Length: 238
Image 1 (cartoon, one colour):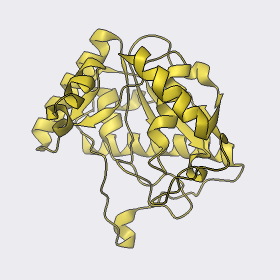
Image 2 (cartoon, rainbow, N blue to C red):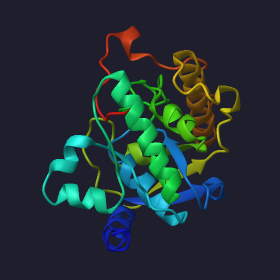
Image 3 (tube, rainbow, N blue to C red):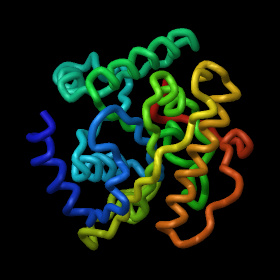
């Protein structure tokens, strides 16, 4: 399924973005992984998908469970191995996470999870406070957690803005970091304190990667929407 999709998605994305991948070799070439990218525009999934494809892996995302019930689309999501996620109780979410991680390990697949759960609300487009889904998924089966950042897509489609058709092929840089060290949290995947600490470590890693691309220091404190009267809505996470 990915090959025919790539014949459409890759050339289409190349019209708008000239993607440069930095340290792409850090994405595991085999076996399971959880990839956690920065997220500042709705154009991001195309950038991330094409970058992952060019790095030799199939780009699979977390997708809302309700989408799997849509005719044709649901079949396509299942055929490409996308991972369903639903709003549920904490017990159901934990069970769903374990099942998803076991499938990733069994089939040697990777999955892309936006750790913020939605577009960053930070006014300067730095990563904001993260949710624990990506870390929980990685800890469930000891799966490598890989941070990623990119910069430039916001010039193609500004956050909550309109698609810019000109100039074409705007430069977008993508950088992949070393796996986040979650060793001290092993076996603690159900403990809130461990999940929060691991998520803070992940978000710091993403922010440092983005700092490299932007050439300016990342803020010491992550933006917290609840402290600014903002709602965190958008993509779902386990």
